[in-house]
Image (cartoon, each protein chain N blue to C red):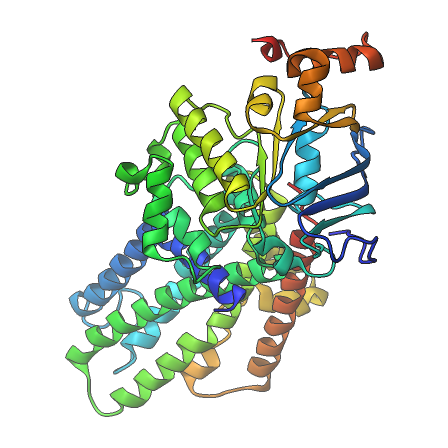
Length: 248
Length: 262
């Protein structure tokens, strides 16, 4: 077994054992069920907009990806490294027979799996919920929702890389989460007032998959996706630089 | 992490070899030109007052700190060239033992097992039994006492049968029974299994009981390396030898921990 696999297994074991991870998954599941129930209780309107036929999974995914899932993904990511520093277990981690590079990627991979589980939980519950009002074209819409699930792992990976970096910079997890979110908020606000900051939009434009929902893929969609991947690489590089120079 | 890659002539040697190792902190403290070798089956006691550089030395050997000058070899491999090969041969306890409060003892050993597939479930049970934690193996570590955490850290250090054991203040917070158990295990690992072991402590009695060779550190330097028996013959007790050595050097500046004389 390679050391990277072993490191990922260890990170996954720690992530699973944390009470916070379980609570977050329960929050995601409960909110999704609530949205599905709300959908039927309000006769497909959610009170503020109409859900198109067969598009319950897409709509619920879209709602959950606006705030809840990115926020939880960010908190878990920050906690992954900040708690190691805070609890003093970084020594245990860094004396394992795996390079710093592998240790960093093991965290990023296990966090991405956690992100995928949250997204898939929403997808499965909303799809099952949508079965009760399914009509012609349900399978195509469900397939598109599944593609969104895969695509959205890119911006969620970006958030995890940002969280890992903040978790390394600050020992205090609360401070890291607060400042990390403040950073994203300021980028979002900055774009409203300064046009030249448009290139930063992929950092906050989490519903970049919207063209997919509307069925009209644009050049913008692909540019955004490419920019997201580029930012992801930059954040991962910064995180790697930081972890390889960490002394304990 | 900064580590020189050039070979300073320790590539084929067994055990631990530290050559001309220097690492200074911003406050100018640290370790200066450290040289020592620990052969297989040898227990090397690092003795010194608080702040002498014992923990820094062990952190450098375990890769937790970087260095620009000098070289460290474990069975011929170095951190700069073969990081994973080097680290696989090491078992260690460094400084305050901190463990994951939400995992139990068996899961902690599982963290090590994932890197060493040869470790069996029986081996984990055997090690947990040997450190007296078998009946608490399913309890979350957050509920453990300091001594129990120390025992578990020791179990994690030895479960993969390392070639080299680095123990920084390993008896901290342990009861008499725990200390006795760990001492006999350390001796057993050196004598029967041929491990090269470094034990650091500011308590003379901890070192006197188990070490075969003693290195006295002060102000970041090793001021003497001597076989324990020679030190005992010269001054009667290791404590006398240690105190005399420090007083000879810089009597006015040495801040001896009062617990040394207990």
